[in-house]
Amino acid sequence: MEKLQNLLTELLNHQQLLEGILSNVRSKDPESYNKVQVKQVELKGELYLQFSYFYEKKVLHENILLGEATEKLMQLFTEKFKQGMLHTEEADYQILISKKHKVTILKKNPTKKKDPVALSHNRKKNYLLEEGVPVPFLVELGVMTAEGKVVAKKYDKFRQINRFLEMVQDIVPHLSRDKTVQIIDFGCGKSYLTFALYHYLRELQGLSIRVVGLDLKADVIRHCNALVEKFGYDQLSFQVGDIAQYEETAQQVDMVVTLHACDTATDAALEKAIRWGAEVILSVPCCQHEMFSQMENEALEPLLKHGILKERFSALATDAARAQLLEIMGYKTQLLEFIDMEHTPKNLLIRAVKGGGQGSPEDLQKYLQFKQALGIDPYLERALEDRLKVVKREES
Figure (cartoon, rainbow, N blue to C red):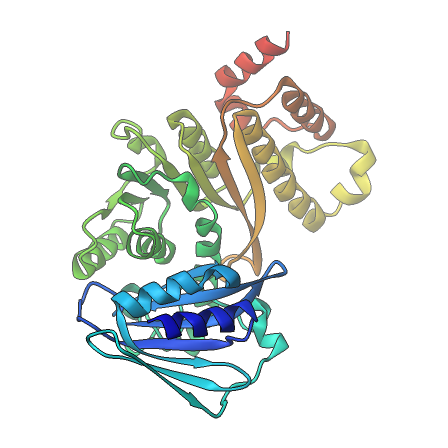
């Protein structure tokens, strides 16, 4: 195996390896991957080798710095695969390894050229749920064909699901791997994103999770539970009910998702999440009407006198107030653009991750100045009055 290690070290140290494929597993395991593709990619100005592990129904990715990838490749060739094809600009290298680990390297004419554009992730969107790899719930919901091809009319939905999962990907490090993570999804509706969340965290990330979807429409819940049974998703369930009804049964909740809970229903979900001490909150607000009738500011009259502008401004002000209140409650909060083709061409997602404590009195002062300037009295502030009093006492 020494000559193989020397070849890999040479190719990687001199940034020559463009891409490759490892195949022909030593022993078949239906639970494991049966092929690995590698390719050179540039991330934030540094070169990596991206490993794509192909399972029967999923693909997992791992990025390793180019100069540190030799060890991983050697491990795969030693323990898993008997064959490989590596591509450089100068030559192709076919790797053949016998049962006794005798290595044969065949050097052939090159078939690949370096593409500076292709080197960047920007050349083509790398989706977390890849095209060409069938996902059972996407097939059932008509987003994919049985072969994994995305249905043209459903491509916007496919993009939306992947955009949502990109936002979920960033919070995975904040979810425990030492216990079952409890997740509540308020207002789950048809549950495209609920199924996507479950599939990504359970199947692709390997987390132990339990997800409960909640919605008021009994027929929708029946359909979702039928799909759960069909897919064998034993830690996913759906219930008829609203946010208030769920309070009595909720114990430890680690993550709260609320997508398109209308108007102050979003605030009710945020309040519950805060009181439960959820580690992560993901919320896509919808129909923010509360501030529209409250907002008054003489200096902003040129804006507020136009209904359409006032509506948009009040929605932004509502989410700004929510974000600031979450910060005061000790959550690191971001407002992110979220693709949503069902409600508006673009929407916002509030992503909040619990920090080590609560916000400062200065954060509270900034919020109070903001609300006073606009003449608003948000539902979420009233709902968290007892918690805010604690912050006020610390200030005094």
